[in-house]
Length: 165
Image (cartoon, rainbow, N blue to C red; front, side, top):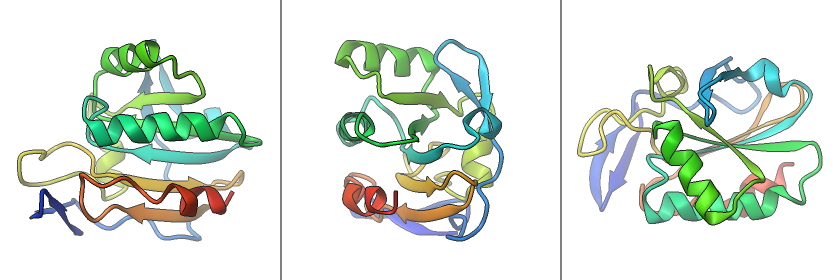
């Protein structure tokens, strides 16, 4: 269990992030067209997993915008924006913002992605949502970088995540 804060108040997550050097666990997430995707669909690609509580908050929206901007220049890399938002909300946000360089994925149905990776918030007003996390994976599925953002309202360290690509 990790301790993070929301507005300076402590909240807990369901576990520890996967370790750098280990393989990312397979996942089953919902795309904005309501179809399912898994890790196999991104085989041979580097991945930046931008994980957050909800695209309808300022910091989460800023991270999607920032990674969308960066994604256009990344070779053999896909940015996955993962939350428990409904796929409709993710699609609406990116459509309204004109963001098409990231892939939005939802963990709304089971929350298994958050539980498997130890990043589900377990208490406080955001219980059940994902904490703000960045996981970078190489083309072989090996984790090369993780960041659990200590204060949910803060943005991740974009430069550190992009530097390992």
